[in-house]
Image 1: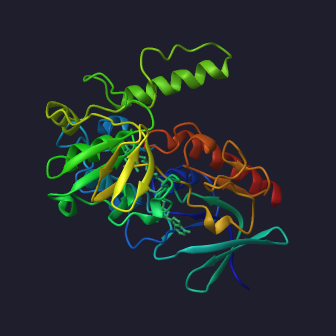
Image 2: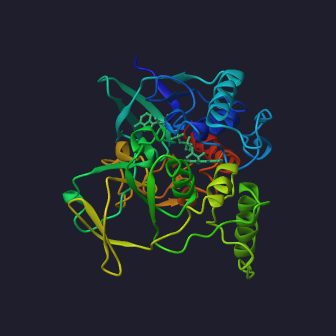
Length: 354
Ligand code: FAD
C-alpha cells in the first residue's frame, strides 16, 4: 500500500528547520521537500557581500545558537553555514531537488505533486516556501518600453555589471540602501524612493527593530497605545557599508518615478533622466503557487490564515511568510515562536484524526 505521511513540509529553509526542531518532541512521521540542491533555503541566492542586520546572538533558530561571527554582523556565508550545521545537527528528514508543483485534497488526504511526476500523500501540510521566488516590481507606466537592463535585487550578486553605467536604484528599505552603497562605488547612481528614507541611529542595529516591534505587538495585544515616534520600524540599519556610503554622500533620494520611457525615467516633477540600468529593490510576494488550485490567494500570494493555520483548508498551515502568518516570522530569531505554535496545532490535529 502507498505510504501516507502524517505531515509533509514544503520548503527546506529556516522556517521549515524551526518546525523540524519542535517536531523532534512528537512521534509524527513527516518529510521535508525542498527544491534546492543544498542546504540554506534562499540564503545561497542572496548577494555575495550581504551581512545580517543583527549580531549572531540575535539571529538564531531555537535550540542552537549561531556561532559568533568574524565581523560584528554575520556574513551571508556564515548564515548559510549555520543553517547547514543546524540541519545536520538535528538530522531532519529532507528530500532535496523536490519541487512541489501542486497540492490537492482527496477524501481529506493531501496529494503532493512534485515536478518529477511523483505524488506523495499526507494527512497535514505545512507550507514554508518563503518569498525569494516571487520578486515584486511595482507597476510603473512605460516600464515594458525601457530599452536598458532591469534587474530585481533577487538576481543581484555583485556590482560587476554596473561598472561605469548610470544606475537607478528603486526602494527605500535596507536592501535599497545596501545595494546603493555597493553599486555607487563603481557606477553613477540615482535613488528613487516612495517616501523619504529614514536611517536608524549609528549605534542601533536590527535587534532593536525586533525589540521595538515586539513591544509594539505586546502593547497592541493589550489595547495600549505605543509611541513609535522614537524610531520607525522600517528604518535602515547603519551597517559599516551603509555608514561608509553616507560619508560619500550617496543617500540622496530624488523621490518617486512617475513613468519610464525608452532610455529614461520621468520624475514626479516632470524631469526626464537617462538611465542605463534599473535595479528594483522593491521586495517580494509570497511563493505559494503550489497552493493555487487548493485555496484562494490574493495578488501577492497571501492566503487567509488565523496565525499560521489556513482558515479555508483544515490540515494546512503556512509558516515564515512574515506579518500575515506570524509576527516577525520571516526572521531567524522570530520564526521559532510561529513554528512552536504550529507544531503544537499539527500534533493535536493528527491526534484527533487517529
Ligand atoms: P526561504 O529561505 O526562502 O526557504 C524556502 C525554501 O523553500 C527554499 O529552499 C526554496 O527554494 C524552497 N521552495 C520554494 N518553493 C518550493 C516548492 N514549490 N517546492 C519545494 N521547495 C520550494 N532575516 C534575519 O533574521 N536577519 C537578517 O539580517 C535578514 N536579512 C535579510 C536580507 C535580505 C536581502 C532578505 C531578502 C531577507 C533577509 N532576512 C533576514 C529575512 C529572512 O531571514 C529570509 O527571508 C529567509 O530566507 C526566510 O526563510 P524561509 O525558510 O521562510 O524561506
